[in-house]
Length: 227
Image (cartoon, rainbow, N blue to C red; front, side, top):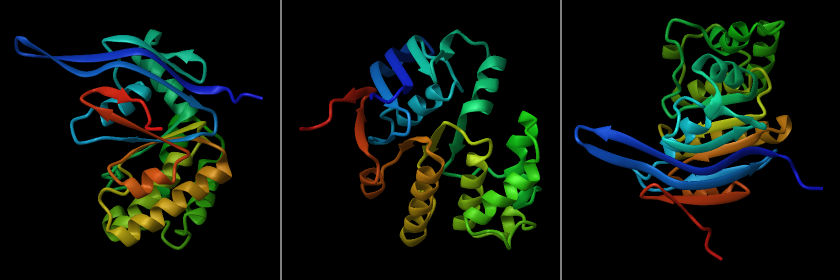
């Protein structure tokens, strides 16, 4: 039985206007991601990886083409509807963690559930922080946590609301190699347990190799995988 598609991208092109010049960031992107699949997007800086990830999340709209997320055409939604879809379907992990500095680890993880109006956000946040090994650090501020601990908080936050799709932008980029390995192990273990689809943007070949599939972007085009 074929897995349903979590992401369907057809003929996606994204251009920016820079003064009198038009800059093409992405062109002719075709991409399918199955439910439960893990995919790595590789490419040099400036190849369009992070731009593509942002478009998949509905943080921006493409110049042309279509993006279906969990069967819904997000390019036809207004900003409010896209935000509501993200709250229901998506978790996002950033290279720079993006934790609120005045919120504790527990409060940072609770926030998405509170904004979405989910029941018992504190209980769910405590359980996720225990899953990532931070049950004893609930009341610590980000400034009181190491980089690896901050990324663990960010991962726990991303899994709040049990998202169907997890998007990760260079999740180990700000970590030393040993800490990055621990975070990678944790990310894939949680992904397996929760059954989410996973799309990772990374420069790290070892991290990409952990995914079920790898694709490369070059100068805004998605390259066919090498046989």
